[in-house]
Amino acid sequence: MSVNVLYFASLREAAGCDSEIVETPESLAALYASLRAKRGFALEADRLRVAVDGVFVDWNSAVRDGAEIAFIPPVSGG
Amino acid sequence: MKRFSLSDASFDIAPLRARLLDERAGAYAGFEGWVRNVNEGRPVLALTYEAYAVLAETEGEKILDEACSRFAILDAACVHRVGQLALGDLAVWVGVSAGHRDAAFAACRWIIDEVKSRVPIWKREHYADGDAGWLHPDPLS
Image 1: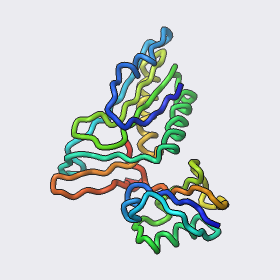
Image 2: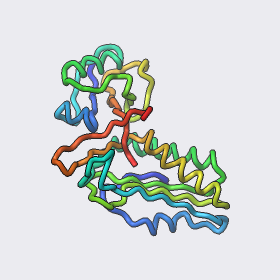
Image 3: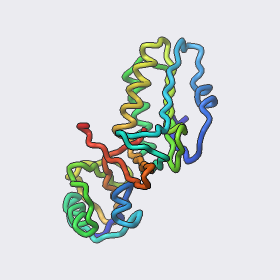
């Protein structure tokens, strides 16, 4: 199963790309943990929200093949 | 008509305010957020805002819809900049029309606070010492 992961702000900077297609583990938490290990993200998962296909979801939500997943670092608009 | 939008260029607030004009309104409250030259004691030269546009627009719209049901207001709107901004530039605008000023002020304040805490927009500050960084504030701070 593969998903498209979008990166923003410091995650984009650390990843060095806007997005990547990855083979994903079964859960969103496991996916972030593996990307964090690979990319060296400083932010821990408990500081992030997660969105699937442009909608905020719970970390326990199921992952489906082909989904667009964004890990949302703490926001700083305004 | 959409109430929330992102803008990748500077914008004029006069037409935005004009869209809120309503004969039932006795009050209008507006808020403008500007780019400041310092953050936590560090001199700032410029800012970049980045958004997850699709989600920012739906979340922004949700905030304005919520404001219309929580407060006794007639309408509300918000525009947030993305891209490169210079000192003094308008970063965000909120406008609210209402029958009376109490609700207009309260809703305007609530909207900007919710936008700052919920909408996926990030600020990168460019400092006078040449450093730059994304701000990811702790929600408790």
